[in-house]
Image (cartoon, rainbow, N blue to C red):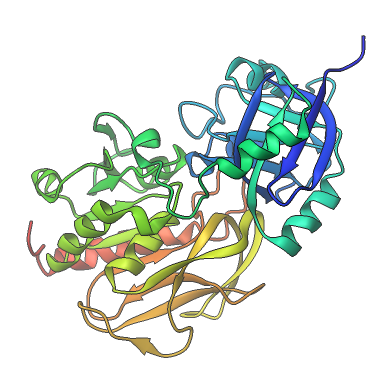
Length: 377
């Protein structure tokens, strides 16, 4: 029995033909590529990929199957999946389902058997763009028309889709040393676990949380997570963070939380040509000179000067981390109050773990702030 044909159509008219993978149907989103050679389950379940079709640059995907332990959230969030050579069988003792079965069960439309090297080179040269996958029909012209009519990622907001509907608590491991209010903009499950391992009781709040909700917890610090969409649309989160900073509550943000921090400091954000996605991105910590290999998933970045300091409503700020491939801002900090952020994933469930120290830096920041009293709480 021959495999069902599928087609991938990019908004600039480039067409790739392959075979259906996962659910049969049609999907449209922004197509991006991820350079990780492992960790596909963590990628699929990262809420930051909402609205995107993800193409894997590693040619062989699915060999370790899917298990119940490595989900980063309650479901798969990618809007489409592109692989070159899917594994025919799962070969890990931890697996309880194949990747193909899981994609099908969760309604994720994919395509396999295409030249992902050619696709990646095309996206590197032309930039991320809208695309469509269809295994329900191979009518290229009709699919291209629907792709052209779809909204772009710039201006998109998905926070209402990915955030938790209700607050919940991740208890500290061992004795509770500190309490953190974590704003869920699309949080990955490993993030509160990394904090809990350090004696932090994590109160995860919806993206709609107010400053009064935060104050009611009496936190030692506030955290804002990763998340999908254009940071220029996240006005509520920016306004909330401004209140946190005005109260001088220690702050740590990652990914979208870094972009929200940048906006709160009156810096702009912009869309990268094709973004950073994968678990092999080199970043330099400008405060120490150390180079880290880090996990990324972002298509937007903060516009701030790499050298020197810049003015903010809360005193001087500076860029603390920079991407070595393209000099993109990868971290920010205030110099006169306890607040910092990074653009990548220090929890990095699939690895690497070079940046795990940032959670310790957050602990030190909260501990130091607590010794002098918590303003505004």
